Image (cartoon, rainbow, N blue to C red; front, side, top):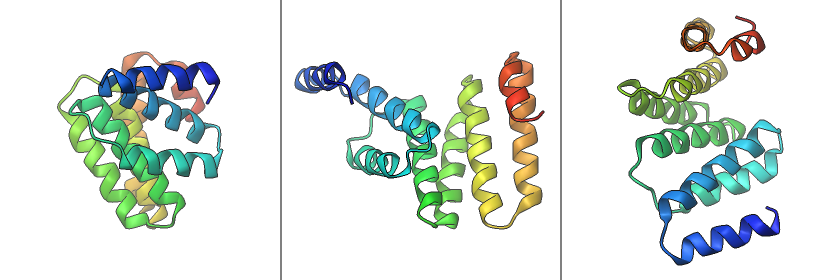
Length: 145
């Protein structure tokens, strides 16, 4: 992490702003995952998992999905599915459309890894439809929908 980011995190930790620290940590972890920096992602995911949980639905959803992705990389496909379903359960009754789509895509990856291709297609299609309704056509195009 750049020096300025470390200083900001240190200050937020010192003042006890766990919500912002958790938000920063999960965002950094997700960004590193998206860049396919596997070893760094796994290190950050382990640190995120060990950090105190903040009772904020969006942060809990993101933590579950990042955990699922880390478990997939570690070959724990069944546990990855459980984590993805937990994230999906948390986001279902919310208005977090993008997080809901991410939960569905994470679940699709997890069930696909378990050999449940039909379930993966269903979850992916639902994610694409949610993104389409949201108007996120760039994401829809990237997903091939």
